[in-house]
Amino acid sequence: MALGEKLAGQLVGGEVIELSSDLGGGKTTLTKGLASGLGYTGDLVSPTFTISRVYVLPNGKELHHFDFYRLAPNDVTAAELAEAAGDPNNIVVIEWAGHVGAKLPEDRLKIELVATSENDREITISGSDRYKKIIDELKS
Figure 1 (cartoon, rainbow, N blue to C red):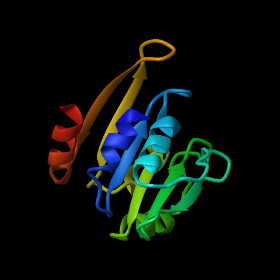
Figure 2: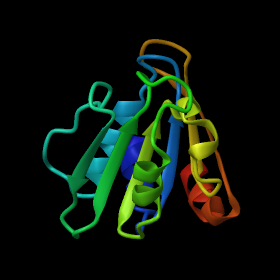
Figure 3: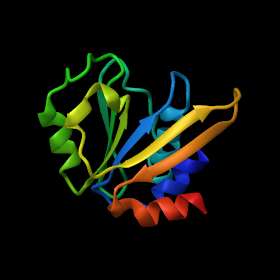
């Protein structure tokens, strides 16, 4: 939650964030923290069964939350993801991005969560040059 809230303070819109971990690794919890940090006060639930959910933020921007866990590799239309990712008013979070392969935008922030215990995570953050400032801020 805390990492998501900290990340929220760095976002302006147009960002694509890939979250990776095993089942139960904290992807949706991080997204809840992100939504909270962006001012969203409603319930945020995993889109595992619906593939995607859209949350309207107080500033008029939208948080698009994708979960491709239930898809076969490359079994998603590129159009929906490209449309969401291409809009500067959207912040896009993608769980289980490996299932869509080459349809992911190259320009994205990657956050990997590895459970080291029930309540602890080792976090690796990387991304394209566009995200260097955000990465540096998150690591501080």
